[in-house]
Length: 244
Length: 244
Image (cartoon, rainbow over all chains, first blue to last red; front, side, top):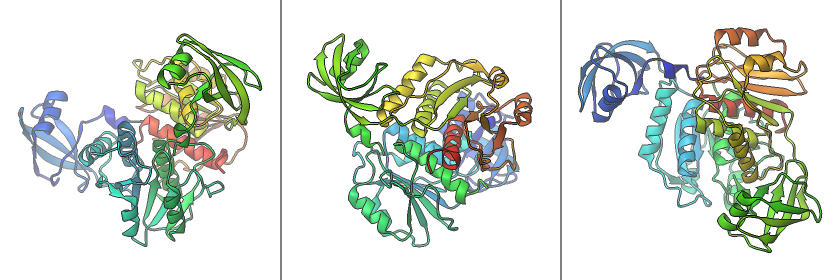
């Protein structure tokens, strides 16, 4: 599936990209390009910055501690995902990283970890690490957009400040007979995935009472939180997103 | 999502389950129950065997090298998934294990690894290890059925022997404009996921020519093979499976 992996090295930079634009590299980027990927002066890579699409760039200077790339030509325009947030409770470290990777591949516009009543306190997150996972996923899957990863907030707080025009799809494994299809409502949406252990009764009651919240069933089997995240994003993209 | 994790220990055994049925434990099972899970004589666990549903069983004998359980009562009947095969090309070890885990959670009836033209020869599989992953996934997610994992076969060979009444959904990332929805055809199905690198042109031509094969698009982004597997199983279950 991953044809981009075989092709040009792709690198995300937090720097404008444009014709003749010169892009300085930090130590980590230089190590990756020149140390790990063995590129040298004259080598060509693809750059993305989440704003200007994908650009070919040529290595002008290559050093151990840095380097300089020169933008040449845009190879693809910016492809932004639909206005879909993924809101999820952190689980075990590697599965949380997995959820972030999959959210990028499946086309979420923003990734928002939330603490719920049943979120294990052991499941701390490092936002910077999760953001790095999002960047790597976009680099590896040929993306031109990297969704921002927010800091952890309490679900209660998030719902209190919720934008009223944004629909919320929540996957409630206790909602026997909940619809398996989303209401066809255009506009901004969010997908909410509970922690292992599900939502607390109080959270469930609150969610069910919210006018913008829609319970959706993910079938008769119990899904891990990471599986539920991928399944829910898939159903949303097919029903309301850009998969059509 | 995983309420079962918090509840009774669940164990798959290759042994009949029924009222008064006595179930001997091998060394590994004894180590898990008595060493790892610290159960002793009188402890109660849940047993599954992929045939007789879920049964409560009580520990009658507990030793380092074995033990005996006594079946008490059936707690749930056998829940078999729809007649859906997951056919996939092995990828990197941990992602192959992941695909097996997700196939069990999402309700595949049979898991079939295939070698395609672009399958990396480095991606060898150990069928016994993958079967163990399937068992663990079913134990952990409250399943009563464990899909069999077949040995690796060549895709060409599999298609040559293909049962003509079984539809095949294949996810072709080059099929621009392919439908995102499945044709509503009842009966047995299979989902086919290519390797990273996709199908070879020859494979793609062959698949497109098969009367029982249906190309489905998984959206405009490039998905890893493991993501594509979860997304495809989700779409099938919602459209034709038991999620309705």
